[in-house]
Length: 134
Image (cartoon, rainbow, N blue to C red):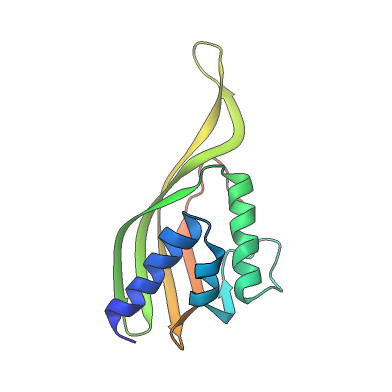
């Protein structure tokens, strides 16, 4: 696939799958052997099952989780992405007024996505998940 096509796959993963929770798109772009370094409690899973468990975990941990893409760059079968993740956590803190507020997630990260047979087969993510670190 071309560099542009590979970047388009990763853009779809971030914007349509993660941000819009469109699992039908995921079925089209995720390889059956998909793996990632986000396998917190589901290391034995692969493919679409792994991705959906990752998404469920992060949506539960960070309600309103959204990603904004800063850049995408392809080199052969690998796409490097830079992005910003925002949302909130379920944890709260007491502000100066004495009111409870949700802790906010606002983190920049990078990803390496490997493409195989026209689908995303592997993701490696590097990001600080503030305020929590699952």
